[in-house]
Length: 392
Image (tube, rainbow, N blue to C red; front, side, top):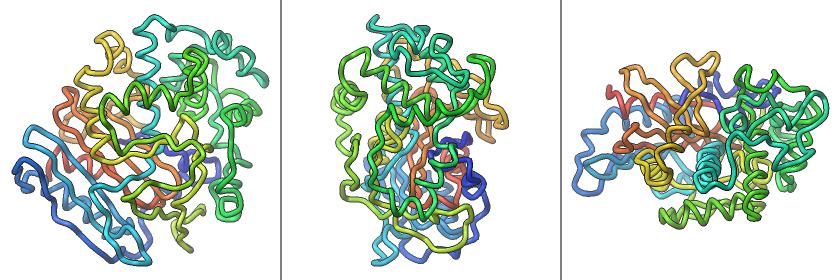
């Protein structure tokens, strides 16, 4: 998707510029797998997608895995390597950190709670989290749950805090602090050190803090963590066996590839293996692990109306324009993107150290794509989305 929503890209240390810059690294050597499919579907229908995946590797992405689902069945392709030391290829079954794609799951749970009459999206944050959003002009009595979910709250993005960026996104800090545990309250407290970007409801700005607060609201309403609610309401009913919320666990379940980052403000220099880390630094804004197959299944179910009543799905798809991204608009944890061929796809993108992911689905839920780059400093997943839904 064209909205840059990664935890890494959001830092105030120019990492967003580094991630958006053209690839400078040499092409990664290694495996390139032709697409294969279930239900006898010919891979020829995804030839443009396969070429886009291979082009991403040629331009410097370490490895790519992608899966598409449509009326003909399931098709997957991989390219590049999953491990630069051994040369092992990526797998269609890879587990990977999905970053901000977590937000769609969080928003879905809150919309389910609204449908059950347990909260209103127009409740103030202070109703559920009294005294949490306060200081430096922040006022939880003036911000609604809906404004958290569509990023119109104005609350500062904690990952853009300079100290946080140096500690968790640059090499010297990350290598020392990669296993630190951060509580949701501590992440929100970082944001409260800053003035809001604007008065609630008057503009739009992406903020991971919004979804940390959203996760806290889920616990306040239900008495259970957002991870428990997502597991019970979405992961288990949809049989998303490759999806988990690891909390503080540093490892990625197998099968999986390694994840790589420059941990710098440039696209050159050493490459670090950042596969293991404590994902509590992402909390309900981006801690989830999943697979391409699971993500396509989830977004298909969501867009087909299997997870939310019609009113709540309509609310989720009610969007706010994104400044600087004329072809994208943001709903409630869901991005609407208009592709070059005029097609609309719904989904989310996300990233965390060494991992860049995108999920996109047509409005009827009948054609879905999910993909992952195991590198965070180069490559544009949008080219793969364009290839899948618009062809060559």
